[in-house]
Length: 172
Image (cartoon, rainbow, N blue to C red):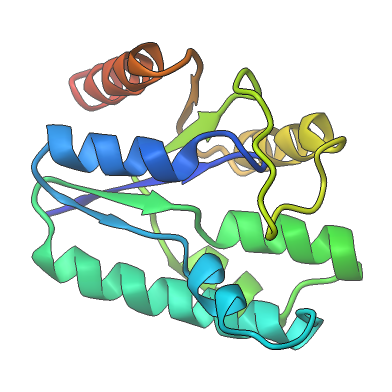
Protein backbone atom coordinates (compact mmCIF):
# COMPACT_ATOMS: atom_id res chain seq x y z
CA UNK A 1 0.00 0.00 0.00
CA UNK A 2 1.30 3.42 -0.94
CA UNK A 3 2.18 5.72 1.93
CA UNK A 4 0.93 9.26 1.35
CA UNK A 5 3.15 12.07 2.54
CA UNK A 6 1.74 15.59 2.42
CA UNK A 7 4.25 18.42 2.18
CA UNK A 8 2.74 21.60 3.63
CA UNK A 9 3.95 24.93 4.90
CA UNK A 10 3.86 28.66 4.25
CA UNK A 11 4.49 30.21 0.86
CA UNK A 12 8.03 29.93 -0.46
CA UNK A 13 8.95 27.05 1.87
CA UNK A 14 10.31 24.87 -0.94
CA UNK A 15 7.42 22.40 -1.03
CA UNK A 16 7.33 21.77 -4.79
CA UNK A 17 11.07 21.36 -5.16
CA UNK A 18 11.20 19.06 -2.14
CA UNK A 19 8.42 16.85 -3.52
CA UNK A 20 10.19 16.53 -6.85
CA UNK A 21 13.51 15.65 -5.23
CA UNK A 22 11.98 13.10 -2.86
CA UNK A 23 10.06 11.45 -5.70
CA UNK A 24 13.34 11.06 -7.61
CA UNK A 25 15.14 9.65 -4.58
CA UNK A 26 12.38 7.12 -3.85
CA UNK A 27 11.64 6.44 -7.53
CA UNK A 28 7.97 7.26 -7.17
CA UNK A 29 5.35 9.85 -8.09
CA UNK A 30 4.59 13.27 -6.69
CA UNK A 31 1.46 15.40 -6.98
CA UNK A 32 2.01 19.00 -8.12
CA UNK A 33 0.04 21.84 -6.59
CA UNK A 34 -3.21 22.04 -8.56
CA UNK A 35 -3.78 25.65 -7.47
CA UNK A 36 -0.86 26.81 -9.62
CA UNK A 37 -2.30 25.10 -12.69
CA UNK A 38 -5.78 26.44 -11.96
CA UNK A 39 -4.80 30.02 -11.14
CA UNK A 40 -2.47 30.30 -14.14
CA UNK A 41 -5.51 29.74 -16.36
CA UNK A 42 -7.90 32.00 -14.46
CA UNK A 43 -8.58 35.35 -16.16
CA UNK A 44 -9.79 37.08 -12.98
CA UNK A 45 -8.91 37.23 -9.28
CA UNK A 46 -9.83 33.99 -7.54
CA UNK A 47 -12.93 33.82 -5.35
CA UNK A 48 -14.07 31.60 -2.51
CA UNK A 49 -15.79 29.17 -4.89
CA UNK A 50 -12.51 28.68 -6.73
CA UNK A 51 -11.02 27.11 -3.61
CA UNK A 52 -13.53 24.26 -3.87
CA UNK A 53 -12.58 23.69 -7.52
CA UNK A 54 -8.90 23.77 -6.53
CA UNK A 55 -9.50 21.29 -3.69
CA UNK A 56 -11.39 18.91 -5.96
CA UNK A 57 -8.73 19.17 -8.63
CA UNK A 58 -5.96 18.53 -6.10
CA UNK A 59 -7.71 15.41 -4.84
CA UNK A 60 -8.33 14.14 -8.38
CA UNK A 61 -4.66 14.58 -9.26
CA UNK A 62 -3.66 12.88 -6.03
CA UNK A 63 -5.94 9.89 -6.68
CA UNK A 64 -4.60 9.54 -10.23
CA UNK A 65 -0.96 9.65 -9.10
CA UNK A 66 -1.65 7.18 -6.27
CA UNK A 67 -2.44 4.53 -8.86
CA UNK A 68 1.01 4.96 -10.46
CA UNK A 69 3.15 5.48 -7.36
CA UNK A 70 5.50 3.16 -5.57
CA UNK A 71 6.06 2.92 -1.84
CA UNK A 72 5.45 6.64 -1.30
CA UNK A 73 3.35 9.36 -2.87
CA UNK A 74 4.54 12.91 -2.19
CA UNK A 75 1.74 15.47 -2.23
CA UNK A 76 2.72 19.09 -2.81
CA UNK A 77 0.10 20.56 -0.49
CA UNK A 78 -3.21 19.07 0.57
CA UNK A 79 -6.57 20.14 1.95
CA UNK A 80 -5.05 21.39 5.21
CA UNK A 81 -3.45 24.21 3.23
CA UNK A 82 -6.68 25.00 1.40
CA UNK A 83 -8.64 25.04 4.67
CA UNK A 84 -6.16 27.35 6.39
CA UNK A 85 -6.10 29.63 3.34
CA UNK A 86 -9.89 29.70 3.05
CA UNK A 87 -10.36 30.43 6.75
CA UNK A 88 -7.81 33.24 6.55
CA UNK A 89 -9.17 34.88 3.40
CA UNK A 90 -12.91 34.19 3.71
CA UNK A 91 -13.48 33.31 7.37
CA UNK A 92 -14.84 29.86 6.50
CA UNK A 93 -14.21 26.68 4.53
CA UNK A 94 -16.55 24.87 2.16
CA UNK A 95 -18.21 21.85 3.78
CA UNK A 96 -16.96 19.50 1.03
CA UNK A 97 -13.38 20.40 1.94
CA UNK A 98 -14.06 19.83 5.65
CA UNK A 99 -15.71 16.47 4.97
CA UNK A 100 -12.89 15.38 2.68
CA UNK A 101 -10.31 16.42 5.28
CA UNK A 102 -11.94 14.00 7.71
CA UNK A 103 -12.11 11.22 5.12
CA UNK A 104 -8.63 11.41 3.63
CA UNK A 105 -5.68 9.77 5.31
CA UNK A 106 -2.04 10.78 5.07
CA UNK A 107 0.58 8.63 6.69
CA UNK A 108 2.95 11.49 7.41
CA UNK A 109 3.32 15.24 6.97
CA UNK A 110 6.43 17.21 6.20
CA UNK A 111 6.07 20.79 7.43
CA UNK A 112 8.37 23.19 5.61
CA UNK A 113 10.18 25.59 7.89
CA UNK A 114 10.55 29.29 7.04
CA UNK A 115 14.34 29.17 6.74
CA UNK A 116 14.35 29.66 2.97
CA UNK A 117 14.39 33.15 1.51
CA UNK A 118 11.15 34.53 0.14
CA UNK A 119 10.91 34.18 -3.63
CA UNK A 120 8.42 36.52 -5.28
CA UNK A 121 5.83 34.83 -7.44
CA UNK A 122 2.60 36.24 -8.92
CA UNK A 123 0.59 33.65 -6.98
CA UNK A 124 2.16 34.38 -3.60
CA UNK A 125 0.23 36.87 -1.51
CA UNK A 126 1.66 37.18 1.99
CA UNK A 127 5.43 37.56 2.34
CA UNK A 128 5.01 39.13 5.77
CA UNK A 129 2.64 36.46 7.10
CA UNK A 130 4.85 33.40 6.74
CA UNK A 131 5.23 32.95 10.50
CA UNK A 132 1.47 33.33 10.95
CA UNK A 133 0.70 30.65 8.37
CA UNK A 134 3.45 28.37 9.65
CA UNK A 135 1.86 28.52 13.10
CA UNK A 136 -1.60 27.77 11.69
CA UNK A 137 -0.30 24.67 9.86
CA UNK A 138 1.67 23.42 12.84
CA UNK A 139 -1.25 24.01 15.22
CA UNK A 140 -3.60 22.15 12.87
CA UNK A 141 -1.25 19.15 12.79
CA UNK A 142 -0.86 19.17 16.57
CA UNK A 143 -4.56 19.74 17.29
CA UNK A 144 -5.53 16.80 15.07
CA UNK A 145 -2.77 14.51 16.33
CA UNK A 146 -1.28 14.12 12.87
CA UNK A 147 2.24 12.74 12.54
CA UNK A 148 4.69 15.27 11.14
CA UNK A 149 8.28 16.34 10.99
CA UNK A 150 9.76 19.81 10.53
CA UNK A 151 11.88 20.13 7.39
CA UNK A 152 14.71 22.65 7.67
CA UNK A 153 17.91 23.48 5.86
CA UNK A 154 18.80 24.71 2.42
CA UNK A 155 19.31 22.75 -0.78
CA UNK A 156 20.74 19.27 -0.13
CA UNK A 157 20.45 19.71 3.63
CA UNK A 158 16.69 20.19 3.33
CA UNK A 159 16.32 17.02 1.29
CA UNK A 160 18.57 15.13 3.73
CA UNK A 161 16.44 16.36 6.64
CA UNK A 162 13.22 15.25 4.92
CA UNK A 163 14.67 11.86 4.05
CA UNK A 164 15.82 11.30 7.64
CA UNK A 165 12.38 12.27 8.96
CA UNK A 166 10.70 9.82 6.56
CA UNK A 167 13.12 6.99 7.35
CA UNK A 168 12.84 7.57 11.10
CA UNK A 169 9.05 7.68 11.03
CA UNK A 170 8.46 4.64 8.85
CA UNK A 171 11.19 2.51 10.43
CA UNK A 172 10.04 2.91 14.05
